Length: 386
Image (spheres, rainbow, N blue to C red):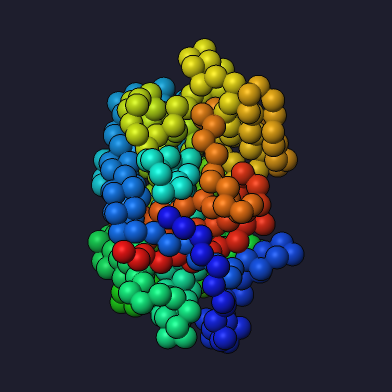
């Protein structure tokens, strides 16, 4: 694994405009950054990232299966009892999942370590699947890259191929918080994939979902919503009034309700509890667990439901090194052994491994200038070269 400086494409601005890539700017810095790329060997991809990510997905399924037999799992994750049967039904009915992103700390040496799993509403999908691939093609044509470069990127094809297996009947409604630009871009892209798969996508805002007869959800044209791709976290839905109508709504959700178990950072201590010593897992415990003392004086404290690095605290040798502010934490915390991201000339890459239908199929790499990947992160493309 190497970080290699490279000249940006001559047609970068035109490429962004062609794809209506409106969310390529971060907070005061370029979000899409092709002034460098990460280079991996085939072995690093296949053995250190692709294989472990798919294997961990199988371990995650065992955590969900445990929750079906042990209600304390729901309690430890802070999931309201009202939704337990609803979540269990979605698992027992084998409702299919579409996508997720596992984030790893990896530097090319030693096993990749899972930091968290975005199993419900991951973004950076479009730039990983499409914009990054076009960069590879065009940078190759402009002789900016060595001969023979490839990319770990079957994301688009696998998404399209997965739609027929999701149990969707009628049109597919897609909803998100329309005030978040990144969410809108991801939602539009999923809609394009659904259309390519032969479905009829109908996009709306979460706040525009209404309630019809018999607790059915409806859109602004009073059409019944039978299948809904939601880029809106399960924990938010379950806190809102209309969430009480979920069990009676008859909606097939993507991601399905059982993914609420995996999108919670409480997954990390549950994985460690069940598979302690796995080479790709870090020691992790629920906050307050006496066993957490085994981690020592260097750890990361995370809220169960934190997003974009909010409320993350890094403690090194007993001293707080970094503490991000944010709105999370009332729901509880976990502690995870500190395994820092690699520092490459002041850049800290977070390796996001995309899983489509539970198979690892691609990478998206975000860099930040601190150990916690937040809103200022940049997306940097990658290549595979033997």
